[in-house]
Length: 76
Image: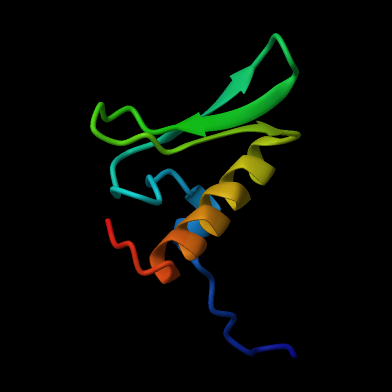
């Protein structure tokens, strides 16, 4: 509908927060496999995602991981 405000989840658009600890997480390109991934740089957190076909898919994977993790009852 024209003129209707659309709610946008800006954390999804950028998606660079670790889904487990909330730390800054970068999406990287793996030139060896032509895929993308992310890894939490904190030594006390083991969150990782890899094998995504695009940077956007990696960010979407971050969001899906965050949604699963936050509803799993395990907390941070």
